[in-house]
Image (tube, rainbow, N blue to C red):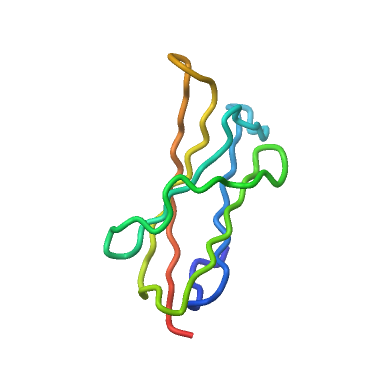
Length: 100
């Protein structure tokens, strides 16, 4: 999967949610993503990810020409259940933005 993008490109961020048997599952509260710029500041906080298939979610980050170059970190958080039974399993990754 491509991890290097030019500024102004669309960056797809994928989250795959599976049960212990490896089957795709859909968490009851969906998935969100938080994206951090290279300096650590938050660019997107709790952005809603779109379901694509069972257990597969995507968020498209539309990078801007003035976004900083470097490695951007993201954390996808599927959330299932409510109250005391809420389960969150963060999944992290990164991508690099470079000059066009």
